[in-house]
Amino acid sequence: MCFRPSTQSLRPSVYDYITENGRRFHRFRSGQYHLPNDETEQDRLDLQHHMFMFTIDDKLHLAPIEILEGGLNNVLDIGTGTGLWATEFANEYPMANVLGSDLSPIQPDFVPPNCRFEVDDVEDEWLHSYKFDYIHGRALAFCFRSHETVFGHAFNALRPGGWFEIQDVAIPMVALDETVAGTAVELWVSRLIEGGRALGRDFTRVPTYKEILEDIGYVDVVERHFHWPVGTWAKGDKMKTLGAWMREDFLSGIQGASMGVMVKGLGMTVEEVEVFLVDVRNDIWSNRIHSYFPVHVVYGRKPY
Image (cartoon, rainbow, N blue to C red; front, top):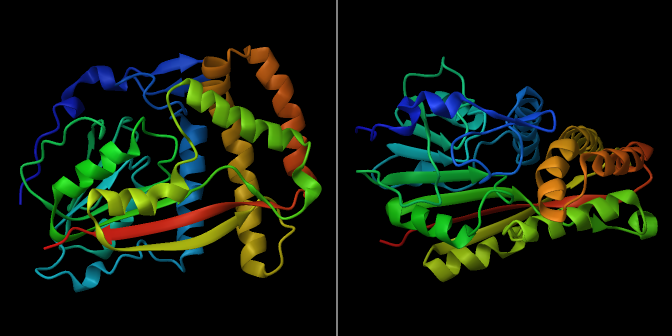
């Protein structure tokens, strides 16, 4: 099977990144994605990879792709980020051709021979000359103007019987008690959602993924729920580990998200955001806020 050539990957301009407020952002389709792509953000994305893996017992997927009639030949990872999932999937399934796409060319050069990457905007029309057996996406809540459009593109790009799986973190946080009420963290989440809407993004779509897939025409749709505590207050070794990682993920991500969303979407100044984030970080470090982010894993297949 041949992959279509990536004309975007051949353009040197995609590597000419944009720097704003001390953070680096993608050049291709500038402003389409509001989080940075610099080394700090890449480290955070790799941490999230391990969080998802740890959450679902070191599995790269939950969709039953091992029983695909005709085998697993072509795989697509949308919003591949650093390409870590695609690289590990290619190693685990050496007979599959794995393609990762993203707005940012931040993936490694040395990857398994059955893995490659391209710069692409998956909200555009998909022009692949072949069908995929499995399409995967993760942590895409912030990415699209229309999740329906992207999930519909995936449906059309699947071969009959092929699977689409999306793993994502829902916002706002869920509070177990009153410890989050009136905190800077609660206000930060509220401002993030408001800023996203001002920029034409609805960051709260994750709980609707199952309904979206069913409306498009996917069948045998399954939704599984997990959660990531913010901090180490939760009981059990696994939850404490996830909580510690979630705290680090939160702390390393709030500056980039805030600069990308609150400055542009809400009109806050950089100085106002930085002062605000001091209180947010203090709340996160306090370990007294008993809240968690819901994690949804949703998958369905294209009917025969």
